[in-house]
Image 1 (cartoon, rainbow, N blue to C red):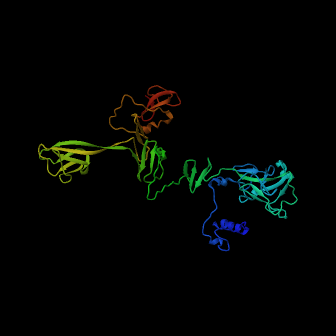
Image 2: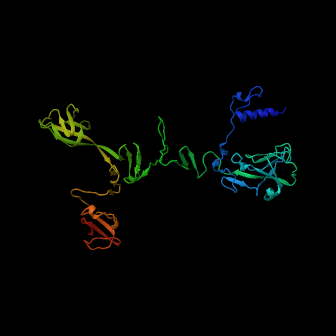
Image 3: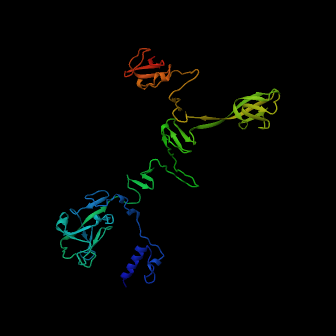
Length: 435
């Protein structure tokens, strides 16, 4: 016995209306009493990824991601010969855009001579979804692209001999799948994802990875790159623990809540000082400052007990009793040596940079040396132009520079720019002069 229409309707009612599995007839179990969930399948591979780009009004021509079949050139369908004659017509194209997107996407249907799409709208017969009042309605399945004359009758007064059904409307022909299309950004909350880059939609907002009580782990074997920028590009209001690579000082630096500190290598070493006891002196002077806890003191090779037998404060080593005459007192100090690539002041506008090639760069507004300065075989001054020299009175007499655009090479002459002569110059306190 065939399944009754009432059973079929009950199945659809429970499936579509309640997302439930039909387990009994409606007489024995109403839809709200069905307990087994059966939601509709949503295939990720059929999701219209660029749906937000579909215009709410059907475009007049192809506009990504919409392909338009205009009334001047509608799409010609083919008859489904497995169905009753002239009942069902197939476009063979899927993903037609339904009128829920916009009323102008409602399909327009014409019956006209086969192979004459250009005249279908103007010379053919347009039939409507609501029919002509003769139970001759049609239904268009936008997802499958199939038109079915669902009414009791075929369109009233229309002969299908030598004719085809034509469809005018729009189809989604964009990218399918969950996510965003190649070359397009995807937004998740306040995050923007573009290819392999995740950024904040608002430039100044931070991106926070919160592992709660766990840890944040970056997998891989090659490495990861932290923010890089010069001193002027430091954040205006950094948080404690902010880490970055300073391209001006060429080192890692971390903000401790009040200032930036460079990170560099450090090693520990032990230095030794030896004194001789005379039975009287119990105070000895060390070559550098230390504390009781950073030195090991021995007398004739026997370690002494700190605090009880000796104390250290600054450079002063004090024994509770004077070492005897002839006693050898050895003091071993733990010294930490730090290797730095650069030194910088707190504001970062003055710094010294060294590298493995033996080159040292000193960057500051003004560098002052006190006492004798011993120079090597030669010194090099970076050439500049006269217009960039600071005021001679500002830098003071004796300051030196090298210019590449002097207008004279005469020793002692006041120098001007816009020339082509390379000369050393000095300040006499009022003017820059050749020499």
